[in-house]
Image (tube, rainbow, N blue to C red):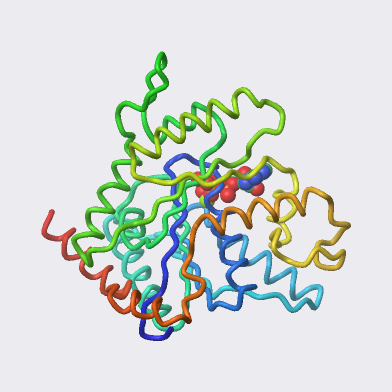
Length: 302
Ligand SMILES: Nc1ncnc2c1ncn2[C@@H]1O[C@H](COP(=O)(O)OP(=O)(O)OP(=O)(O)O)[C@@H](O)[C@H]1O
Ligand SMILES: [Mg+2]
C-alpha cells in the first residue's frame, strides 16, 4: 500500500466522555490483529487518554512478558510556553510532522480528538476518510448533534459540532474531491431501559439523515471497560487469564461482538490489497498534502 496514502479514521464528538478514546484504541488494536500497519495520534494534549491507554498496554505487556501488537503512537506535548498562539503552532507542526511520518508506513491512521473545538480538531476532522462519533446513549447527548424539537422529536438546528464536521467535509471536498464517511454510534447503552433506547435510536436515525451520516449498532454499557483501560487491553485481545489478569467474563465476549459489529459497519477498506482499492487510494491526496492545503486555507481565512 506504500505510496497510496493512509486511510485516516478520526474519533470525534464535542461531548466529553462519550467514548472517543476507547473507540479509537479498540479500532487500532482490531486493525493490528488483522495484520495492518497502524499508527495513532492523540490530539487531546490535555487529557491524553489514548496515550495513557497505549502506555498502559506497553507496561502490561512488558511486565508480563506478553507479545502484544502495538500501534506506532504519537502524542502532542502539553503546550508549556507563555503564548497560546505559540503553543498551538507547536502542536500543529508536530501533528503535521506525525502525519507525514506515517503517510507511507501505515495502512491506517487513527486520530483521537478532544471534546473541544480548536484548529487542530478541525484539521483532524478534515483529514478523515472515516469519522466515528460515539454518542452517550441519552436524549440529552443527542443535542450535541442537533437541537431536537421537544414535541415532534424532529431535529432542528445543527449543533456547533455538526457544523464543525460539515465545514471539515467542505474543506476535504475542496482539497481532493473526497467526502468524509461519518458514522454515529451509540455508546454505553443501558441494558435496562428499552423505551428510552428505542426513542434514542429513532431520534438518532432522523438526525443522521439530516446530517448525511450513518448509524451503526451501539455498544452496551459494561464495567469491563474500566479494567481494560488500566491494563491497556481491549476486547479484541485473546481472552486468556494471563492476558487479562483475571478470568474473562461473558461480558467480554458480548463486547467483542458489538465492537466487531461496529468495525464491520465502518466498511473500512480492509481488502485494500485488491487492485480496485489501490486505484481508489491513488486518486486520494496523501494526508500530509491535505494537511498542508488545509493550513493554506486557514491562512487565507485570517
Ligand atoms: N461501552 C462502555 N461501557 C462502559 N464504560 C465505557 C464504555 N465506553 C467507554 N467507557 C468509559 O467511559 C469513560 C469515557 O470514555 P472515553 O475516555 O473513551 O471518552 P472520551 O469521549 O474520549 O472522553 P473525553 O471527551 O474526555 O476525551 C471511560 O472511563 C471509559 O472507560
Ligand atoms: Mg478522550
